[in-house]
Length: 135
Image (cartoon, rainbow, N blue to C red; front, side, top):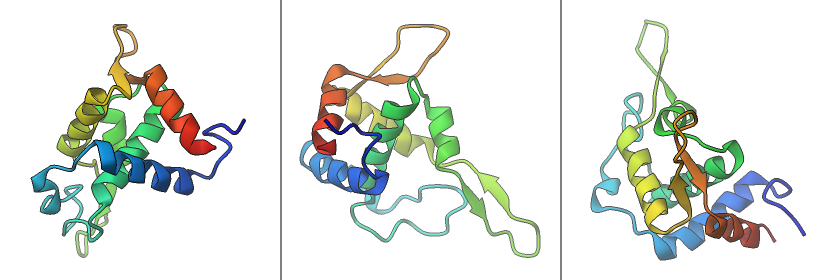
């Protein structure tokens, strides 16, 4: 049986985004928000919210307990500052927190109870959801 790690990430994320579009609606403000301080404009693609949610779900699956801070670092961008050298800025924490809350509400992920490794982990329902999409 194929696993999430056996399939190409881009095809898995696109399949997951289609399924999440049915369950987790994007907020109204997602049409106008930038994804990072380094970005000059909002995303052009209208389905960017679901692609980001699918990508976050995949990262939670593969990297174990992961928090907002590490996810912000994963979605960082380099800002064009003119003549000065470019500087890397973290991604938007509000977007990541909102997506994590939506995924928790859908019972695909949950918070860990351990104090040493705080963050979100996959639930059995979330694991089976991604494994079914990997087939």
